[in-house]
Amino acid sequence: MLRVYSDFNCPFCFVQHSRILQLGLENDIEWRFIEHAPNLSSNVRDLQALQRLNEEFSLVLQRAPGISISKPEFCVNTRLAILSFISIQISHPHFAYAYLSKLYEAYWQQGKDISDTIVLRGILSHFDINDLVFHDHAEELQNRWQQQWRSSGFNERIPAISSSENRLLLGLQHVDNIHKFCSNSPKVNLNLGAACSLQEKSHLAILNGTQTISEKIINPSFFELHFFTGLNDLIKNMANNRPDLIILDFELDKSKNFQTIELLKKIPSSALKDVPVIYYFNQSCEHPDLAVPYTLGAIDSFSWNDDFSFIHAKLKRRAIDSRKLLQLSQHSSIDSLTGAYNRREFNLLFDKLWRISCRKKLPLSIVMVDIDYFKQYNDHYGHLSGDDCLIKVASLLKNNAQRTSDIVSRFGGEEFVIVLFDIEASIAEEVVQSMEAALETANISHINRELPHRVTASFGIFSLFPHPDISPNQALDLADQAMYRAKQQGRNLIYGERSDPLNYRNAD
Image (cartoon, rainbow, N blue to C red; front, side, top):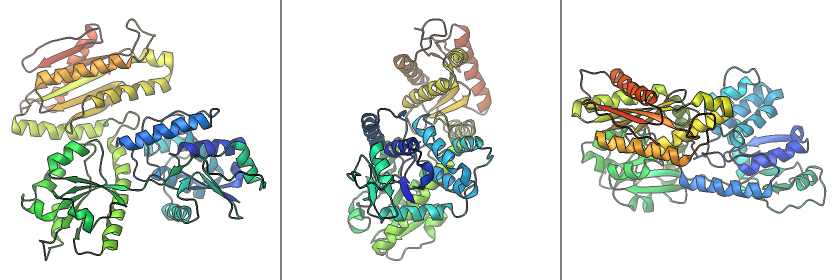
């Protein structure tokens, strides 16, 4: 029996799977899926990971020109997909390979987020399986595969094929070479092909003002260490690159009456929201009260005089747990198609910002966005292209609302809502104008409409100083009315109102 070690987010593994299918060998293979990049997340924009994806995808296009593959717009974590595959392998073995293929196709041909439980359920529905249930032994089996992959001479590379005679074929191989290897031919070329390697480092954000902690306690060979002198420094530099853990100097936070951990838990940021906090007791804290961190909301603590291997094991386990919880929590708050907040999470965040604005008398702007003639777009280009259009529009909206307090949410269908907190009305108008300009620059073709033959949107803005005499829903309704006025006046417009109404427009 041949064993193939793969990961769903590796383009070389996707091509290798396609070539095995082409040879009709899929039923002669024992498929073992491992995580070669456990720190990836579809909702964390890791520029280094995206660059690596671009490079690997370009190489695949050169090495496998006949394979149908599309570059995804994001890097995806595969843990839930792997656990779901193992569970199907146990409960419905006759569907296992077909499900495996659907998972590969979903990411590498349809650009879907296979870390999203909604997407996984959708794939399972093709097999009349109505629920996503992880088998009790799925994680145990996956961990065993992971350990075998790391200890079997694969040099931590995928794809990898091993035989019962302990022969190895590493990396993406030509279809003829795969055939020779599988048929036990002596003429097989065992040279290493293009491969993905292990990318395991977890990211730790350290708030202690110095870098001495790394030299004495945390080995940078195992962790990516990011040092910050204060919370504002952390927010500024990590808002779009979520760390796995935040290490907080206990004495430093104590000197600030523990305001840092309190503020961390109130940040309405998609990247820093709910990042676990671990307190570090330095040398000046000789007899720490180890119960205090838990009462403050930290998940753990460690001390400068703890055993190194103990600290390493603790941080590694906590980082893995952080990623697992992130995957599950993200998709309860994120729209699975566009990556914007969903309606439920929007309501929670908007209510929080509204109360802060009322209490501190801060300005706030609500922006309703509706894509013009979207039904005609779907009718002409099809719903898959319509989904792609929604993804592109959501991306440019998010790219122009990047402050940690900005909220971009899919409100329903082709409609989005944006909340710009603690910002003057005139500045909010400039932000919206930059969004309209970005949409124009994107130049998404739409010939099934009147001029201009590109995708446009109507924007409605309502700016105010929130106060108890008006409810959040009333303010949303006023922004919605402004958007409909933009529609009525010809579409492809920005129409804004303030508490003291001011109308303006921006047309082609």
